[in-house]
Amino acid sequence: MTHNRTIFLSTALALALVACSSPKPGTPEFVQKKEEDQQKAAVKTVEQSLSGTPDWYKKNPVDVNSLYAKATATSNIRQFAIDKAKAVARKDLATALGNRVSSRINDYIQESGGAVNDEVFQSVNSVGQTVTLDQTLAGYVLENDHVEAEGKEFRAYVMLRYPIGEINKVVASQVKKSSALESKVKASKAWQELEKEIAEAAKKK
Image 1 (cartoon, helix red, strand yellow):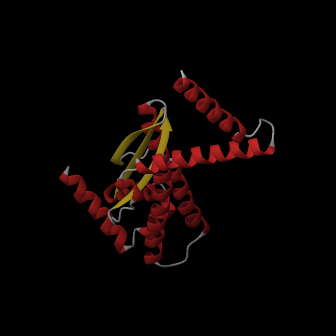
Image 2 (cartoon, rainbow, N blue to C red):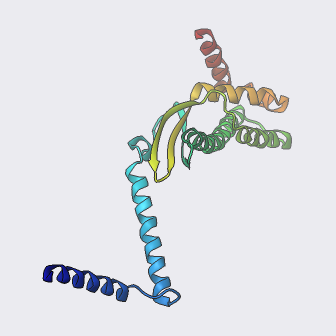
Image 3 (cartoon, helix red, strand yellow):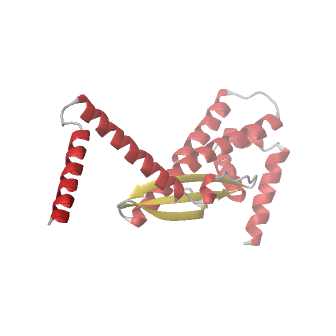
């Protein structure tokens, strides 16, 4: 009986100490503790997320023959998490592709020499914007993907790759849409080599 009473008194004392150490609701101390608890929870979530990040996602691929884009997204539906991450990656890839296409066309124009009129300048800008807005990106490859459970949700990681051969096709198709651009770059040796590469690639298929 004495033993049971001792246990009861110890438990009561422990509960009393906890109650005394917990700030009362509505007090500044209570608000501060709540904020600290939320920060700790946020840090724990980030740490759990980082621990599940695949190694390939942490590195930036170095490949002169391709463009890459990575993205991550969450959803309570596994496939939807993957689809969301792919959509974000496609947007980033389209932006990178638009910049690359504009840069390549500018290189051909400079190599061709001569003055650049407003029509040519506007055509180059239009090409970059058109490619950037086109996020369907036919020809991209899903290089890597990974899904982790994160609490009650799924977190998806994806990496998309756009091969240089597909970039060449985009450059060529965009140039041929504008008579001003085509007439300006066709004298470029690099442009002639590009057309040759595309033709040879088509024969191999």
